[in-house]
Length: 395
Image (tube, rainbow, N blue to C red; front, side, top):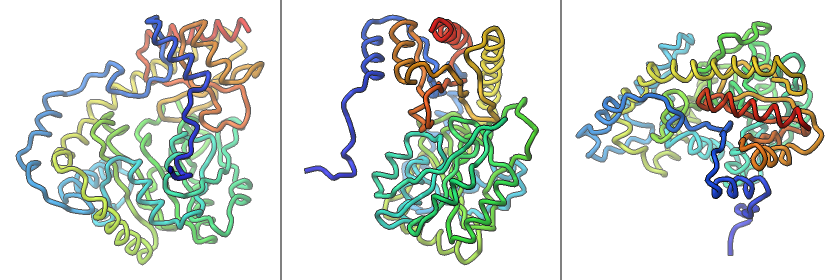
């Protein structure tokens, strides 16, 4: 009765069973996976946000496939404030109901059923579902770690086939936190031009660069003005303003003029078919996007405090190490691979009341990796890490 594209394994695995049992027990759980900023103790300007959503203009249905002009102008102003040197044309901007819908639009734009998008691994697990739902095959290439993360270009070149349509990168990556370098961007543009590929760059974490990040490479800024290849930049309120519940994302198209114009015309028709992003949030977008000025300093302070606490605890032991990270909300821990990552994560839940994500969730090729969020409240993060290190050290 059901389509093969939804033929997922829906039964609980041991990790989810352990988590469910722990929650049913009512015991305190030290959650080192927390990534929802609305539940992590940050202070929002509730009056400004609620007032912006109460605009009478939101009562009128005013369909605009690309998004209302004033809403798109607010996104253009955001990029201008970033001093990226980008000259973003609002006519090449499509507002979407979050970045997941943006991916849906792009996969439909670029691919026939069975076509391929190349994606860097390690990677966020949601992409597999987004690709499968759209009948698109996601084919991996790899990031390698050698005194920092970098693109393994031989694996990328090897992955290109006759049905490859685009290269997808998260910049900075989730969960590794590495930015694409200027040299890597140049090489990516050359590959896209040679093989007639589009470049899709997810920049939702772009504003969260760590102050103490390595200066060993020159990091590329936003790709929003990339003109060497047909390029689609994705971002939205979820990370920029810590407002995931508002469900506002966008696609910014750039590249060779004829290609970019054709792409936007097709995207506009796709967006029109899905109907416009809801009106009240579009009218509120200038105010909601401005909330980044109040929210980002709070998030960055939390991230830096937890990173400092993490490094301080790691310095007092030997089994666990942190891999270099340049931005985002996560840290990758290298742990002794004496058991599977999932078995270790289950043991942490059951014996130590600590929740982490095993590396295989993010397509790490080997065991020996755990992912922790840097958004967890500081005291909870500190105690959770202490318990984690006691567990691993007692292996």
